[in-house]
Length: 262
Figure 1 (cartoon, rainbow, N blue to C red):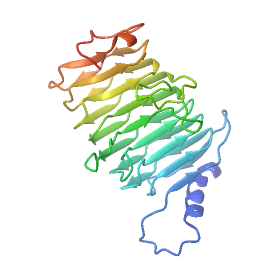
Figure 2: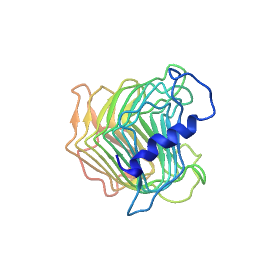
Figure 3: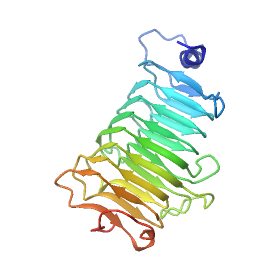
Figure 4: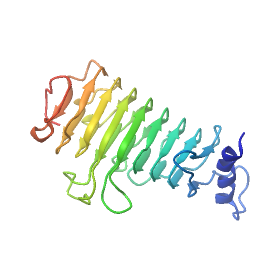
């Protein structure tokens, strides 16, 4: 293990220090506040280590290989640029809106993570992954790569993405959410109307994904979500409409013919 990789364990121990809890107690939440540089990101290597959730408030960080069960939702929350989260497992996040991962920043990569058992039963809208752009902290996200993740037994959506001018009306109106790829992901949604909902995000590619459950439609594009490319996705036979789109999002669209509203 390199010196940089050791930091992950050391930071967790610091987060738990000072609390005289027995070894069998639930692990503490990992707070990452120290980053690296664009050419040398700081690596936090979990090697399967259990934590009570992860908060990233730093730039140029790699978070690799942590496990969390019943963490406080969102299981992982990212605020930063140049952040990669990979090979983590988030199971049954609790409280709040019940999300598995939330992210805010530029140059974010979510790769080969497994998020499962999000729960709407408390009135939450428990997504596998979510982002929005409502203030100076929760900013519009650009240059985002979401690849090879598994969203299993998700009550709400695999991805809920709202830009700064979202239809919800609570966006900051600042910046742009753009240049995303959502590829090779497995999406099993059980209650939502769609697997992926895109609101005011431009230049998005959704390719090679598996829509494994049976929502009304797989993808919703609304509110100027222009220049989207949809291709090579695999649909559960019960999904009759792959793409739902509104008039404002049709500019630059490439993909199968939209057959429903978003």
